[in-house]
Length: 118
Image: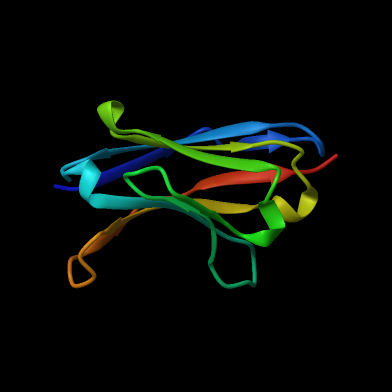
């Protein structure tokens, strides 16, 4: 079955960095755009960044210049490098695999908590 397993969340102070990882199994990784979303308490889930198989990236304005998304197709893994973290980045971060064909299923990871606090 399909699994997206996230890791790398935690508690950090403002200005520090974290790297999230999302490893996929059960899918043909190259057929999926990989994305990171986040959901803070009381707020809707929002797109943070995504990346196509060809490496084209897209970022939310709030994270441009601070976060970098990447993928290693050989390892079936997507990454989110988060630098200069702010308290407002606190949220549960979810990995998403979105098939290139819109009518196909997409998949979500279980989420990993990121807390930025002094």
